Image (cartoon, rainbow, N blue to C red; front, top):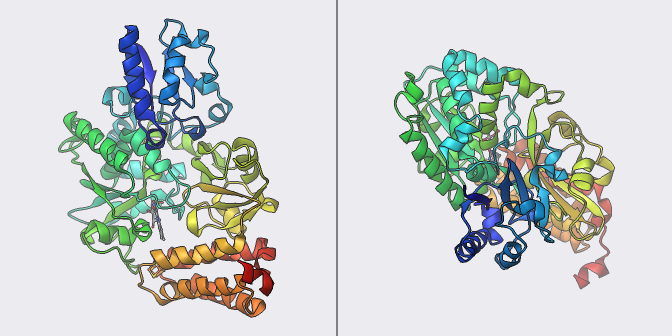
Length: 523
Ligand SMILES: Cc1cc2nc3c(=O)[nH]c(=O)nc-3n(C[C@H](O)[C@H](O)[C@H](O)COP(=O)(O)O)c2cc1C
Ligand code: SF4
């Protein structure tokens, strides 16, 4: 039997040389006459250990990392390819059983259960790890029974707004339409986020199964996955998986021998943050420039090409197979308050242990940053943490007891968004960050409404004046007033939420906005 060696095909691993590691392993095996099979798996999400390679022995996976192509020779010399390799290999990069690494062991992996474990492009492997059990359950229920199960799970949209998925599906289910659509939002534009990408590259079938279940539930026969342009590896993985599912009769007419038809297509975006907003995404999918649509009508009533449409984030749809196969209660049993189930949290920025951490809602920000993430990569004190992407608030240490929960974050004038946590050390200049928030909004604004189109530019200018020590108090009052106008007068959350990073910087780090004129001249 061949020795199975796992090398991730995830873009984060490829970026640090995983392809070269795989090639070096194959060359080495030929030289050593060793019978190995290199499996290109997904990432385990411990990004500081990439490329993390694994060897399977008696059902246990032993890890080595971070491995570069230059490390392969010494690993092989230490006995990597021998029968009892991982136990005997004493090498500085040996990590022991991967699933016993603290960062991994402490997680509750429901959505990411298979990511890093299976061969992402093998339908057989997916099925061998409980894949397509959820669809089988869904096909045994009436469509409204599927919708009810999703509603009972308490799942809320993981794209940012946290809207209950069951209610969205029920609206589309109840809306008459000869043609309905399922659209997956894989635009993943938030800073510090990569969970959608990891799923698409590491377990694409779970997304395909989730979308198929959504189609069965609401009566949609066609689905689109809208992927951000920066994710070419996701496009390749999804197209390969869609092809395999189609071949196996799991997409197309009469899926899995049922009376239902459902098929999928991948579409690539063109690099606009605002095209992650659901209505401009629909415009973009229709071949137009991505501009936010006024609501109503809701996409659930009039969405893609004017038809009833479910639009959900990758993580929302990827949670569905577990909910159907294990039951709504099994999912809802995790979490706190109205935040049920697990959240795939992404630790990024200046952090020692950056990566994906799936856990039940309720973990505090402090636990995530100091304990799980191990503090900053620079070794300096943590000063601020931005949660929820570029429109999320900056949290100071004083708020590190805030639990990861939609309502708890709202109560602190913040948001969870897509679960991105970006860490900054004590060298951060929060006035610069506030200016950056306005600049980001000005660049990404679709231009449809005045508070955002004009306000963002004026905001960046005004913070610039404060930084230059010009009429500090008067300009601060102007910024606060402008934030109020943008918050309540913008058509969508791009303009409406830009005040969150700005106001949180002002509220929690006021000292950074007090600039003496002479200091400004030096900057
Ligand atoms: C400016 C802007 C950008 C957004 N970007 C994304 C994104 O990249 N991915 C995403 O899933 N949702 C994004 N959203 C949220 C979507 O509009 C929408 O709420 C989401 O796709 C609904 O899916 P969910 O209910 O599963 O979260 C964005 C919203 C705004 C206002
Ligand atoms: S808030 Fe900005 S992005 Fe949203 S509709 Fe208005 S101009 Fe467009």
